[in-house]
Image 1 (cartoon, rainbow, N blue to C red):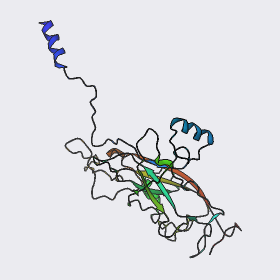
Image 2: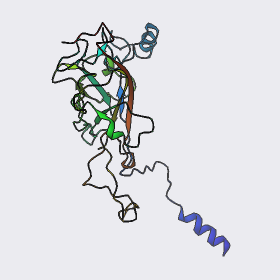
Image 3: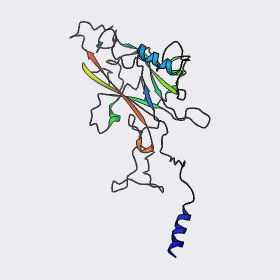
Image 4: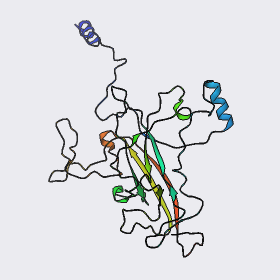
Length: 268
């Protein structure tokens, strides 16, 4: 009898599990990332050509150049009085992000959203309350497809072609005036001094609060998932990681000067 029981047990496992892939609704195959330009040395370009001699004359594939990390121009950023503008405000520029997820037709599958957070403390209980510059990056406008030209980042080696999206900061005016044009505050002005700016991008809708019962406990659906409060406003700047969102951040620092204290300020 014991032999028969063992045989029955062994016979029950007749389907091998090799190659089985389980993918639920909240799995994100490819995370989003912020693309920034990194200059490559001659040595790197030479090594790159040894990997693929067909690389174009532009050198090793690298992301398109963006000035996002250069939060300073030829002169100081300044807080200007009244309706005057900062002469040294930055030119408009692109934010580039990459997300590899494709649908069944080979088209980008995810909607990419982004937001800017100003002076976010490390222990902020509600990052959404620090959203800034909605006139530059609304938080609700999806990134647009970005077409790569010949050469450079488009000539990827041993990887799928990059799927880039972008927003243009300062698209409507041609300028980015960080110290005077934050419409999230009444007069748009920042206080003189150092400021931090965090860019957050995500490949899912922003987080919404979950439904709580009268005792303050989460309410779950039949599948055991917490129910989202669809009547609540999305918390812009807060990725919905419980729903499988991936996200990327980039932090920058810039300084606003006062014309009364800095003779290099030019307002007009």
